[in-house]
Length: 299
Image 1 (cartoon, rainbow, N blue to C red):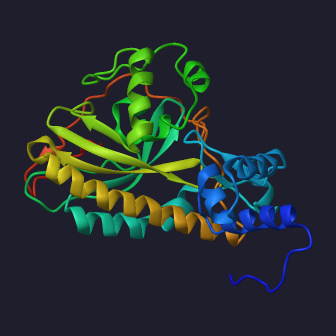
Image 2 (image 1 turned 90 degrees about the horizontal axis):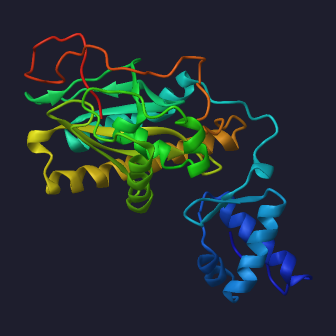
Image 3 (image 1 turned 90 degrees about the vertical axis):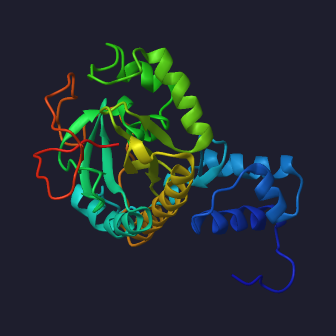
């Protein structure tokens, strides 16, 4: 947007409106970023952003960056259905599958579990199978960790007040260990599964955020551990980041049209389902091409 001619009548109001315009475009800002955009000192930018947060026009995330707030979400907005989420995310899954050659999946958080709602299976001879519609403990999954990382320690305490659900190959045995790993997930921006869902299966996952910057789903790349090398992980991370950002952009476009998703807080099931508390018998996920199995593991 081009700048209007002349000087604004009230400079502080103009600065706040300029920040709103930037946030409305989907940009996330730190106080330092805002100061540079406005040409002011950081303390002035911080006061302006704090005022926007106070009125609900902006929200500040755990990363201390500011995003568009709930006051600017259309009043007619309705929660996004799973079908709507699949429709918005599927093209990103297709691109992610093409770029990595691996099995890719979309999941949502339901209390202490994740549910797989869409996926595309790799065509490589050694591959990880999809598991659409099934559930497993979130703390074992790369995507589940990415979603749990958005919760506060108080939220995690409430969610896991009876302890972590049991899973045969889980490596995290208590909430304290999970919290420490989630600190790293927040720092690096993605979750990782190192044979925690099943032996021989590894993966990475990133959260997909809505117009308020809240996670509503996660995308994952599931890889046989035999080729889960540093170079392959780096390549998959680049593709995964692009896919997560593309899906988030489509969610924001849907919000602008009046139908943004409901923010997922991980403290209640999306469809009334109970959390998973034990490991069911599962077919091996890493399998040769053309071999049919009823189930495949996930990341």
